[in-house]
Length: 208
Ligand code: ATP
Ligand code: MG
Image (cartoon, rainbow, N blue to C red; front, top):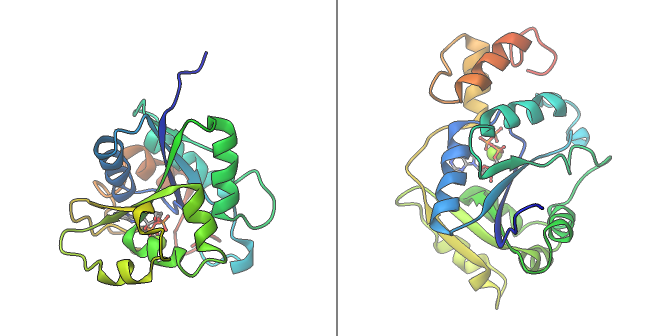
């Protein structure tokens, strides 16, 4: 019998590739919000954006599995990868809710930049009703704008969490690979090995 999950974090992202900023944020949310698990949900191939430097979904999925495998409270869902066409966060949250049951608290974990994007989504109220949100910020980040832009009455659906300043982004990791600069300590060792082995993000590879 699978154990009962009362509170789950959901971390969506392109994970192109997953890096230590994602992992530190997930671990902090796990601890600060007493979550039972964090589910990483790599986005399907963003075909609307043509290729736009996004590695194949299967590579991004495997790197996410490699990065999270040693943490018993982390798991990876294929839900967006296996679904054809564009995926909407609200559909993903509904599918996870169906899997985990009504009794489970769902928390969508995003960076502070990501939460501001939610407000431009098609139906922010619907998304904010499906799950509460954890907005990860760096110390000193200005949240006034966020508070002003949240739909009235739903302000309590968003909690702010400070994570140690981690100036790591997937964009920077890809640039470093292309320029032959180190990515050690920015991504888990296994992810660095995977990128090396598969030639991802190199200048001459199709997904750079
Ligand atoms: P890219 O540079 O390609 O945009 P990214 O590093 O922002 O990639 P994503 O896969 O786009 O990574 O991010 C997934 C989620 O993780 C988003 O909610 C994003 O805000 C958050 N995130 C990304 N980097 C960090 C970081 N260093 N610290 C905390 N959260 C982060
Ligand atoms: Mg990003």
